[in-house]
Image (cartoon, rainbow, N blue to C red; front, side, top):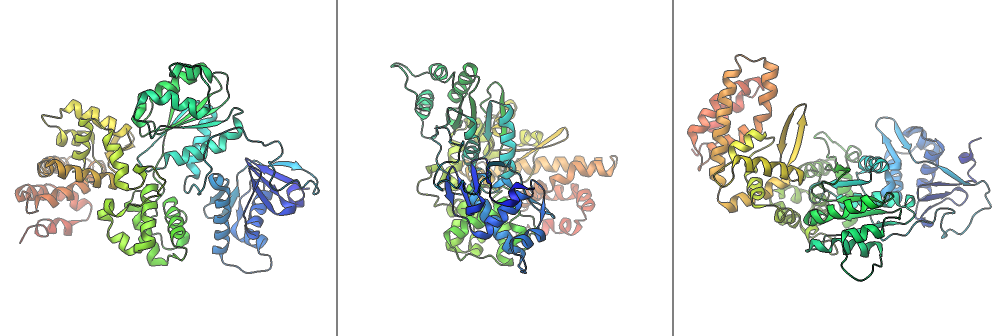
Length: 561
């Protein structure tokens, strides 16, 4: 007989306990507010013991003898995931099939009379000490990332979460840390470096976080490491990029002397430490162009985050099909960056989604007003990028702003040809390029043996501002147009000798840069002669892509007459 189906046994998974006879869900021994239908959904999923339950079957179980809309079930799934917080990934959506509970169930009691106190800790589940902040809001759209990082944590002692500013490194690190808390008898401890301006204070910050009482004298990485040598604990080193060398030294010293210590670091670049496993946090999934309704929208983490934050600011916010399409477009234009989406959702609640969508070209003026208690660099989109830009070397700053002249994907050869100059030699370009990729300001897309690169739209918008401030934009635009004129003149010759598929694979990805070059060439400040030559050289590409109308219109639509 299925013990769960009888409903008297207390169940546990992770830090949660289910009391079926009282229809209660506890987290860390404290009751969680959960509606009756949502509780029924949870029990049905648990009783399936890891099997996928179809939506119709689940609705028949929760609403017997009643006909209900599927969005009712979706609403209770959302409520249940919200109740589970960082562990929302336990309820998995299996596209086209239904839902699945992926947690490992433990049976704590066989007696319905073993009720205990609803506010008491789960038997045998008293949590180790920690200074982790309580999670106030749900972690949205990171189920797969959470699973992958937990898998890495099972086999590696040093994991660094990297990614662009505002991508959610700290939130994800804290979610992982909460999940792992029961595994570390001596606790899970958060050391925050964001406020540090002196790297020498890193060891003292770690010591204070772990509540070490060290003898008087200098607090060094080695002394702190020795004090932690015999402890089974997890350290979260948060925001390491501006104290990167000191953070790396602290991490390596700790791991060398203590075999039971684990470290999760967050940084815009890796620590480059021994044994380090790097997890690059991707943007949230963005809605497809053809997302038609709210059900489609909820399949994407960026849209779920937008809706959650917009409805928190304005409970009456209810998207129809038209608004859904605009939300999808906003999420795509903001590259799925959680901070940008949260700021945009708050603005949408006051300005309206249409006004927001039409003003995203001015995103740095528009996307402000983050949480009052957030770090200054997380209160506006511009401040987030200012923080990253301020940490760059001069050659990295020059290259970043010059890369803004490219549209879409760019090769290292193209970047070198256009961005190199007397003050930025080719070797400097290559070194700075690699560093910008490592610091999450340039996105690498590797296909087989070939790597190409791009700036996220928000990063490019910021870099274009810096390029304008430098006074280099016109010179760079000319270099860019001349480079692609030469590329397409070579492509025109190759089109007669190379296999079409192979030729097209190399050149069709250049269409965005072709258009950008033509925009400049036929502008008032451009060079029409370059534009004419480029248009003529690109005729084979226009033809292969069936864009002859665009080819014919290229000069006329841009010439100032």
